[in-house]
Length: 209
Image 1 (cartoon, rainbow, N blue to C red):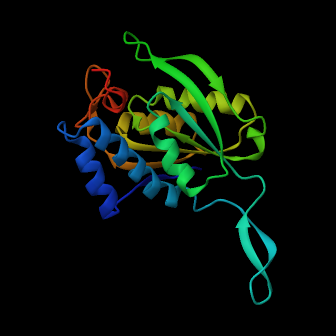
Image 2 (tube, rainbow, N blue to C red):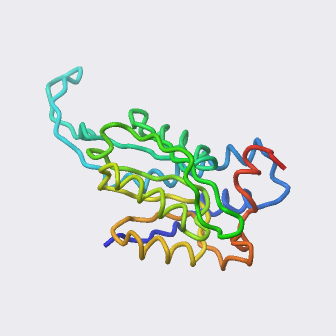
């Protein structure tokens, strides 16, 4: 069974609070998402497999622990998930990166796929799926469905803001997936936006409105 992790680190709480503020501009918003992603990534990568490697220090040979050759795949749910990629790459620069394009049907609130490009060796990697918002949970579920269809097995999901409804949907659909959350909010409104939330993450990241 997967676990639900809601972070209580003071830095994550502070940066998420500033992120929510409607007066936070695009440049600062992007930087905050990256910083929060780094802080979350530290914990989300805690379970990565290690292997023993012999190296030469300036004084002697020694056996050290390094990430296994299977490594990590970071999969961003487009478009907003792109904003979290650099933060995770700061921690795991050798990670492969994949992209899943989904948009929300405004009538049904269900995701529609328009793009999927994953690393060829996705089945061998620990996969971390990124999306700043977990609202209805449908996009996260569909993204993980697509990854599993292509052989992915070891999957985690990271988001900044989550609604209880989305957590429930994702956990029921993929109970083995660990979910990492910076802040768990109150509920979804009639338009399936998270309350209090931070508005539309994609629009705030890319200044579409």
